[in-house]
Amino acid sequence: MSFLSPDSLSSNVRAAITYQDLVPGQALFQQGDPTAAMFGVESGRVRLSRNTSEGKLVTFQVIRAGESFAEAALFSETYTSDAIAEIQSRVAIYPKQLLVTAFRENPDLTEDFVVQLVRSIQVLQSRLELRDVRSAHQRVLQYLRIIAEPNDTNLVIFDRPLKDVANDLGLTPETLSRALGRLEHEGVISRAKRQIRLHDSAVA
Amino acid sequence: MSFLSPDSLSSNVRAAITYQDLVPGQALFQQGDPTAAMFGVESGRVRLSRNTSEGKLVTFQVIRAGESFAEAALFSETYTSDAIAEIQSRVAIYPKQLLVTAFRENPDLTEDFVVQLVRSIQVLQSRLELRDVRSAHQRVLQYLRIIAEPNDTNLVIFDRPLKDVANDLGLTPETLSRALGRLEHEGVISRAKRQIRLHDSAVA
DNA sequence: CGCATAGTTGACTACGCTCAACCCTGGTGG
DNA sequence: CCACCAGGGTTGAGCGTAGTCAACTATGCG
Image 1 (tube, each protein chain N blue to C red):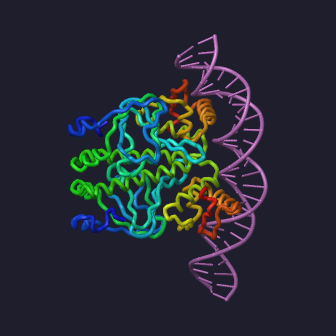
Image 2 (cartoon, chains in turn green, red, brown, orange; image 1 turned 180 degrees about the vertical axis):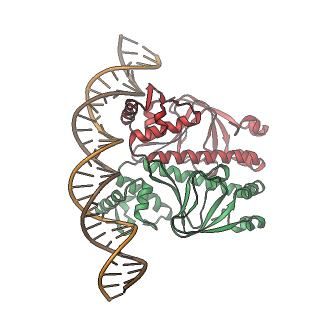
């Protein structure tokens, strides 16, 4: 990614970046914590989520290697969600104050930063839109289409348990399993464990 | 609001701002249109929404007088949603290129802008979280709590049809009606048409 | 006064959730 | 090498709740 790549930062900024390793399930920060920094995932996978009062887990975004997160934290007093490592991960820490001052001197950096924010908004919007699809198998199909689109290849490979995917979709694992089964039965997709191929009939 | 208030803009920027009046139902822009500007609502009410392939209407945000919208458009090629006037409205038009250059010269303005973006993200996050509450009456209650919180008074007054509110919540008007009826019956709220009072038992 | 729209209520349906049992895989240790 | 185990995934049965369709009332506006 271009944003926050080493050569886009001045040396003094680069020097202030530290790193942290996280074990699976470890929290980097929690909702309500005072904001101290934004982060980039060097390796592994971090989930931004929140626990509702009813005990449900709402996932806002899943951050993978090369992506940044908690951009919004730079302009907020506290974090608005939890950040949990789903697997062993390594994150880069960009101290808040440091970046804010860097932005004031470097408009290009700022612009890249804003682009990231906009991207977050768009991700959240599609997630919200997805939730308005009531029928489980339509929602799953839509989800697969969204994931498959960028690659353009009609292949979707999940790198995490289907039960997590189900949760992202606002479904139970059982319902997701049945939905996938039905889609396969209808000939819309074919699948081998976590690899799913969308047939042409799924594009329509 | 502080952002884009007249005195925070240089005179040449101010001069380039134009205005447009919208009749109820009129679209200011539609998803896919090339982005030309961001906007502020001078008076009236504008809805940012999208029509799904299944014919549903997903509302991302409702913009009221004094608020700005389509900030994300400044850093995107096309608009990602429709902007529809829900009632007679007047919007200020801030041309894209103009603002982008203004940002490069005015870090304070940029920071205010970013704060707006962050706010959008937080709004979307709570909307998404709300959707994870399955039971209708719990969801409605949660929604009322969120709306009531800032004012701190336990009174919620809707300025638009309940069927629109229902749609925001991902419910049908019938279900919302029943949910409100039930909450009232349980003594959690009391209501007179579109005015709703939350009782202390609703805070828990 | 009459029409259109919003809101309410009722009966029925359908779909996803819950709970439970079962299979399958990968990993661990004897 | 196999026995065991834990977690993920699948399948089944039954239930509950929100959606749907319809009829009716209430409200606002010409």
